[in-house]
Image (cartoon, rainbow over all chains, first blue to last red; front, side, top):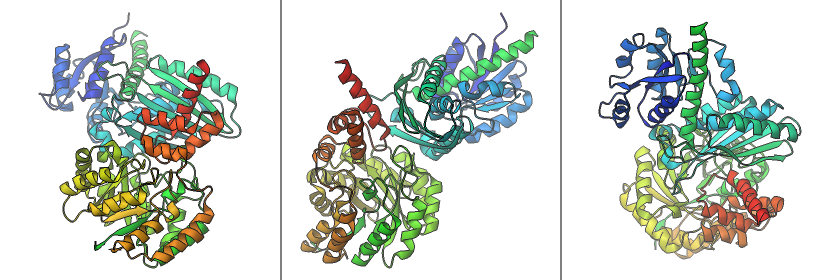
Length: 298
Length: 339
């Protein structure tokens, strides 16, 4: 069996810690480093306990070990601003960066929609859009691959507990980035995104609604089949991704009502929004890892 | 009781809900000019769900926010124009657009426990020199103390006025007073306090009077009550009541009646009244603008609107979750069919 591809995670917060759990299970990836800035942070301590190398010196603490430890893929779960600095330092060392921040330096990546396309392009940085984007863009794509979509709109509802201070401070970034990716990756001519934070207790599982307006009357049979097949594709890496209702057809409107339950690796199951981000990032890395292994053994 | 109160008209924003956002530019100009002439100092003009609300989810309007605002703003002789913005739906780009057109008041609305999503919008409004209002929706879903904490956050971002907003029309006069007093207690003396009521339990006017007695400086109301659910506090009634109480509003008692009767009632698609579904909103504490969506789902799927609304309340749905109405109707229908 080919050797696992070695990886590092920057940002030992909720996302980074949940991602670590997923990487530790991966047959293709090996998490080697967890990078933070606070030696007292729970995330770093937790990673160290799991036998992962840690540094509290930020990306500078990792740089000397990139070649030594043969790190090929680095996940960035910090913030948009910090990601730019991290990418500037790491990219020259030949690593692939998987960006879980809204920085979007590299192209958007939503695995079942456009990951294969990214693989062939030799990119060194891909952006994972937003949680709402990961949950909904596969559905927009499932419609647009059958019939042109004039307009697509997504409504992501997450529990208040699963929306961190970063999201709250810059909620416009969510709506803008998601709407852009609905167009660029989903294939809609025009995209719109809405996010709602619901404080109900016990916390609600993430809900996502996708409305597409097709060019002309929607082809019900083909679109329904495409949506069901896409649900199965997403379930391969997010088992809790479910179609609750729909597709509802109303003239040229196609509406899909989804629910995303997380695996509960580190974050509670209701925060499917965070789980789908880490799962999509891990999935993306695995596909790149397969490619790297193929090159190594060729 | 002698006091000045600013009445803020909702006819052309909350009133967009029962009009399915289809008010024409002519209707909007006529009503806005009537309100201006009657002495209403502040008039809100936006999609019912705020700037950027144009969507499948909330309804596409007859005209864009930009068109409505640039039609109304230049016509105003004394009234100022405000716009509503819900972070998560509208963005700072919409806010800048409204400011450029001449909107002087921006009201940034969040659910009553989520004030911290409004930081970037409130601080920008303040930076642009706008009258900047924090608007805490569904206020019945937070206790007075919690509401006060959220109000304080909005004030810290730069809001110069905080609203307790009864989006479901669920509050009663004593619970209005408790909330307003708690909020008043934590705010700086020069930060204003406002109340936005709905008439689902028939308490619009009574709650507004209670709010004024508890220290409110601004009260929202709509001519002929044109607003979501059973409507907003009817403006012409409130003006008459406040006149009898010697509260100075600057609004002419008879002129505002004429606006309501001659300009607003004729454009209604149906009477704005406390029917059983609107009453259910108030009784169960459900977001006002769900009403028409639930009625349409009833027509399409045969599940009573009242059942859908009660289920929405049970599931803890909040403002903006209009998408969950069709979803809830379909789930209820499936349950019925399987039993």
